[in-house]
Image (cartoon, rainbow, N blue to C red; front, side):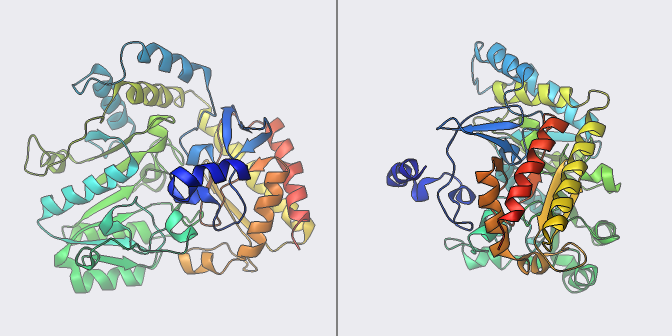
Length: 425
């Protein structure tokens, strides 16, 4: 892999097209993958790994699902992009609004970053306010006004904000501690009339896996309603991952707008944002808030996303998927306990996280995640890769399972984790 990385670094900044792939936080050279099948990835040397990133979330059906490959082939022969309306776009929007009732209307884009960027612009245009609230460790894409104390790759590289972002933009972003209800109330008491929106990962997947504390999302909803601010749920990760209707259905909280990605593309580049019809009516061509995209709603992404959403509605799908994820977390905890390692693991739906910590409870905010043992995580990560189990190369990333992670796959995983925990010194 060293030779491939050296070759990549000559023509690609850092050798990668997304920073967390570079293994900077864990050390060593990244694995270059050649193909995937079911729950497995195969590198360029032909070595097999059990995959717990699932392309960072989209592959809820596993790699190279036969029905997904079939729809790719059927759609591709008709053309890849028209730059004009298609029936597939309409069918996709109809299904999304059916599955996520708070999204009365939806607009397709090509990435999660586009979705959050557009939702923020629309919120500001709708409310005629400029200030936004986000939470420390929540990552909403590389949008200038949102890349402040962000999660995901920004935390992995130790750069919670970025050069190139004008201070005038970040001055309009207020960052609060996730799960801190008192800080949220105080912020609204001081700035409520200025706040256009609050954007949040309802379950955070960009500083490992952090669920909302009881009452946190409820307080957010109440404050936004009282101050006529919009509540935006960034469900790019959690959408169709933690509940068939997203985290908002899991916690019974209705946001004003929702951002989606990952699963709704089934592995194709795609994103979406939507919400109340009166808010969405402010978008061009109906309203004055401009948003556009040449490849938005392209047929291939729509066809794959539509088929993915249809397949995951199969009776028993979610019960099986969630049960397998909990089994994974349980076996990780069991192997860590047997090895005498201070460790906490958790699952929410088909997302999971694990922490090398002495604390009796798993972390609930960024500061607590940061206090976990990074050196032990790095040792575990590399030992797991050597044992044929591939997890996210950062202690600030959640993991994902797919319906292809059967009991047989979990048995193989347990053996790999046993070796990985034994390697920690």
